[in-house]
Image (cartoon, rainbow, N blue to C red; front, side, top):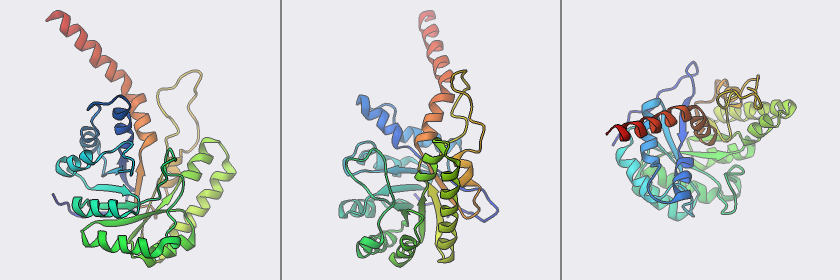
Amino acid sequence: MSFSPLQWTDTHSALLGVNIDHVATLRNARGGLYPDPVALAALAVEAGADIITFHLREDRRHIRDADVERMKEHIRAPLNFEAAVTDEMVTLIERIRPEHVCLVPERRQEITTEGGLDVRGQLARVKDACARLAAAGSRVSLFIGADPEQIDAAAEAGAPCVELHTGPLANAWWAQDDAAVQAELTRLKQGLAHARGLGLRTHAGHGLALSDTGPAMPWMPTVQRTSSAALIAALPEVMELHIGHALIGHAVMVGLRQAIGDFKAEIVRSRRA
């Protein structure tokens, strides 16, 4: 399966990569086959997702090898394979040959990715992985903090792209700490400019959410301020946004009415039959 390159210019909106890990987490919590992350990936593409993102962790806590194989076979959109910089993962990616790869840090104890990849501290290893994955036909991105030293190291490693970690901004946004939000936004802007100056393609992601997380409730009023997703999407240097947890959570909220209606209709039909 091949795709033409995704097109982007400074005047266009950022492309959206939808991370489907949390669908697999929901499936795995009960066992069995449902909900199927591959079916959800296909639905996401139908709904307008530009890229399907997933993280195959070493402990296979959500996405599994079989999911990756099926996505490569069935999903008609570029795949963004997030993985740790290990020989096991690089070898697997060389065989799967996804369109995009994002190399990330990984610790078994963490709930989600807690920081950026230390490229400078393992430059030779990351450089070797970038070369191998480029030879396999995958575009490589490195998930890093907006740190000039790490951005310089990413360029030295031969990665054509970086994805800047927006988690600190997202956390400050949820805490309603506007000073911290502005400080993080300034840091990200500087990082994006530095990366672009080195000729790197610039992406962003982690923890970004909407202001309105679902239907308004009296005890949970809508937040009347610019969302963390909008703050980052507004930056002209951001070519791709990769969003998962908040997007899937929002889908649960806004899709619940339809889901209940579907089940109620099925109950009525079964009795009539």
